[in-house]
Length: 627
Image (cartoon, rainbow, N blue to C red):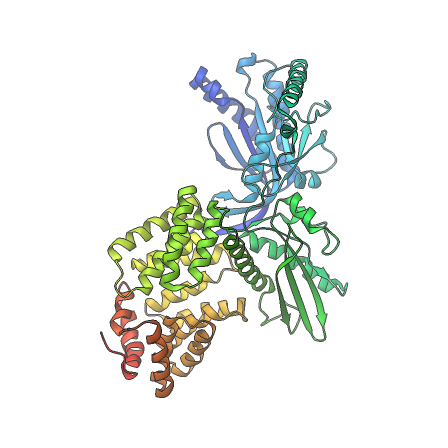
């Protein structure tokens, strides 16, 4: 397992690709490579150095470059294309090497020496839209470049491209001053066909279409159906500041951008870029029209306002198809958020919004089982795993995840959902078939990581699998990767805490649990569960009782009752211990201490020393048998 640090930043991304390189290779492989190398050394690389670019990677006929500014990146693209055009004048037509260039300004993820993310994906789609010898740029680039460039920008409209939720507003850079011909982008123009022949062919095609329409009737002329917004897709409008005070307006603007970034870090969600919605105002836009234009299912509106001595943040999730409110939340802060001791509002709101969006989408999937696409099946599996929960829920969910993978073998949420059913079976079954389950858990979690190294759900599955396998150092690396990738995801710090407890270091776990409590102090279900464990294994029985009671109140899950039972017994409250024992045995008839030992058998001796001293001793006091 590696420990490469991952960060995010805004950058100008340039992707260049050689047109018809396979044709050059087929004709003369050695000559094609030599010619391309010579062009890079003589034309491209000097220009990259001059304008401060960085070569991220080359792949035979393509290059991925990063620049600090859109202006520098576009100057590089223009100078290279003009130099290539001049160079090709002296070459025979079949020897000319032409580039397509796409340029975007957007958010990127830096993973060691590599970059990825939405900013790179959009640049790749722009490159595919460019003409041979041409450049296509995004609206963000067009807005940022200076007016001194000797080119014209032709708006070729909002383009829908593969794997990008929203349409991309694309501009063609006119290097030669020729007027732009709408509809004749590189995706629809056969290379090498003169304009007059294209127009003749277009006229003939129109006549044929009219004839076919007259013969087969008007149904052929119906508009194509509108694209269906993907699951968990949303756009976040700028939060309003009702008071109009500059401090609150600044906070509202920062909250909007932080929430957009944090929601985008969740690998399941598809979030419209902030630049696409920055000009809209909550309440002043028709959400149904906006949802269609951005191809998203939901619109988020919010407000920041002062109420006496408190700051109130409200957020609403609106169904873009109907305009109905699907979810809402209200957070109250004693002071303006950001002051010492206050939870981070963007992380807290992100966690709430993710949970709300997941519940809304699960309900939609359950209500519409006929929409049997892969992601719909995953959401139905998620709903089944949570209700009724436990081993019963896992067994109901497993075939849904398997069917999703049959439809889409590379769907990471289906893989992580399937992994979760195995994890539940190991933990909730008295004698699970570990010899069959653990290799499958290892395989599924490894595949999820191989498909998407930026998915915190994939890293969580990998981390948990490594725990069951007793590979503790690697599990800690995976937990750290979750923390780095997504600060709003408390699974990382909480599972890191559990790994520390399982390796005999409960005191070191406390800061990670306290951090999770601070992210969302009103949602204590998971943090109090781990606080309960840590305090019990530290021998702080009064603190353990308090945390275990909170965990059991939030979720009457049987494993919470195991720890609560032991905490009551160790604290000397025999009456409450007996009541808790009865509640546990109603859920897990015949539960014994050996069950716990067998479940966590991969843990090191240091953990079982704590188990014997604090958990097993408490359970024995309360009358639970060894076997």
